[in-house]
Image 1 (spheres, rainbow, N blue to C red):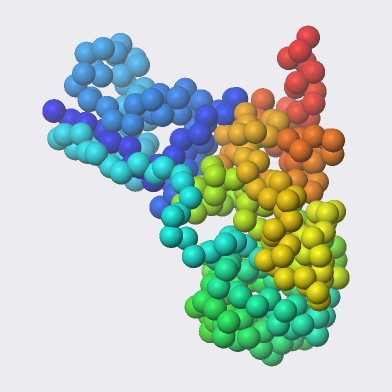
Image 2: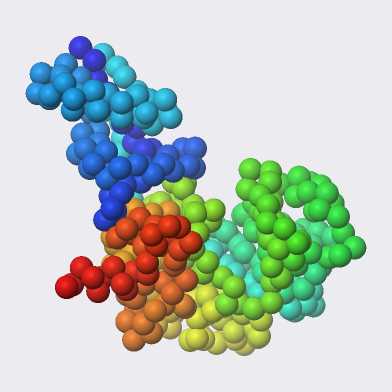
Length: 349
């Protein structure tokens, strides 16, 4: 007797028009027909002999094609008996040493950056740190503050900055390899091209980093298909959950693009800011609660931005920068695309 078993790291999400399969182990995703998603979400373990008896020849052949697709892409396996895998159940880590998932520090100069870093007393509270430099730093400057951070704790750092015209991309690569123990990614802006290298550890962007409003972009290339991102998206907001930031002026916020501030790093500690009753207001707004997003097959791997939403009077409003319509499964620019608002209006007729 043969059984098909879906791996627990294979997550299926059903959208309005189609489904998505996430491989949390290899950090990739597959777009599949809605019917496939629905079937395997209900049947993670299949007795093939019983399936053959209960199904028509056509249905059985179709399901077997789907199973071959899943096996080929290592999303499941065949066995002589049912295999009981441990399920991924999103929950708060009881012994999680991190109070925050992410700290963002924005800076317009190396002087301000070092001031902000020194003001953060306990970097051990953060799992991940993102530094956004609105200038073109020298290699020595980058290396210096990386070493400064490394002395404070052991966490992953993503650095976004404008390319210095006097520095070759190869030099940034060398530094990335040299500091691979702490640096998770370099995003280099103003390079004149869009390119991804070193297994997404190096991202080149032709646009110049000039304003905080450049965040919140939603596109496939930025989807995060890994275990931690998936769990966090199920537990809370995919952007703001356990996030704290310091903007260019030293103001403490949920995100640099948000309007509300909770003090300034010059005279307020991050702990004091977090204790403000409004600080966690957006933490637990998941994509399952957000208009349109809740009907989208990408909802657990896509980011969310509460700073830029379509209706500022509704905290559950769709992200303004999303150009995907899940009701027709089309991105802006694809043939047949229409805005979400038009699809909703037409369905109401």
